[in-house]
Image 1 (spheres, rainbow, N blue to C red):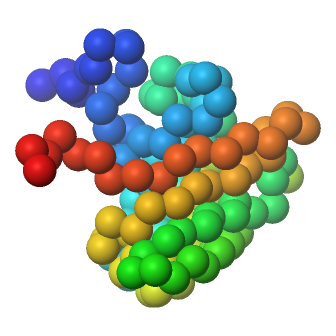
Image 2: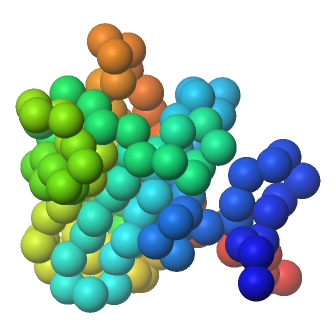
Length: 130
């Protein structure tokens, strides 16, 4: 089956099945994977389908959960096709960050891409009727 496509033309989930975080005005996306005791974030293009290897050494994630705020870092974890000195994957085995994301903590991911800083909003607004 083809992936679910939203009205704005990009998939509802990233290529690994994770949640998408928009960077800029659809300039890039971050795909978040969590729930396994580790967290991985993939940098994707504007269509949220292709990996984008960037020169950043880490991503910074700031989360708020149960009234507490904490920052986490995900070091670069290059994939096989990434160019030398660049990475499209950032990963951490920080169990606390994984638990916070599983508990639907909200916050932001901050990343430098091509000399520009992007902040993506992490929210868990699944189409629930509250």
